[in-house]
Length: 387
Image (tube, rainbow, N blue to C red; front, side):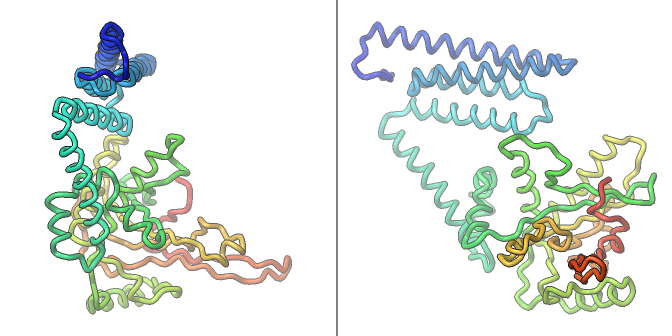
């Protein structure tokens, strides 16, 4: 391997390589010890010691790479260190484990690249860059009507890579303007209480995230997986309008007065419906594990669009988290196995309106907001009330 320093003598190169190799080996030893401690961890203290050893091992490997960045042996040891550090973290620390696994993969690929000749290395890196930007092109051309070639490339080639990089969303979301965020609201009905409770993803008010917000954005991407809609050029089907009119007549849930009826219907595509069913199944399982005494009767899911305020609303100091800024689309009621209970529900795929009206208080002379929240009628519980 060539030296990382120009003009260094053979003795200096050997000493540098030896020092970097020892540092990498010591880092690998720390990470392996951390993984062993985590395997037998029985308290918060031993868990903290395990992840500390893993992180120290990764840092030592990083320092070794700084000294010899083009040495495949050092990179290989670093890859093994990061892989061992994965198991020094608790199993439920998903982001930490993913970060360490990515570090292991990158170091492993780099080690292989530096075993190749200079020409082969340039070809390999160019191929990786070409693959990435072809994937970006498929993301740009994916909004409906999607070209056949784009859909084939997405399904068969680029999907795992783009979903990992989260490039499939960003190249659509920020062109030309960012659109409203989508949230998932789960209304969970159990056998031990007549009133259902709510679980929201993501929800910054009830969950503590890391300072960089990585967990928040990972959870936000969960909602985007369920946000694929069927392309309906002629608007909602006629039978959907018929069932919606029944909901108006029988349940007293009107259309939203601020949106055209066709804009109040969103039918998830087949892929999104599969995700919604799996979310319901997973949520039911985790809730029963958390509270073994309960039985899940049903889970109503609302794909909720959080609308952005207009310039005038911001100028009027309106609350960006006002109840009326949410548009909950009811996307199904599921049992604990993730099976849709009623595919002919009159409200299925329609907005459940949250309507705000304003009136003048005759005593104070100030404008007062009044809300008619039809989510309470439909779900049997208010999603804005603290549990």
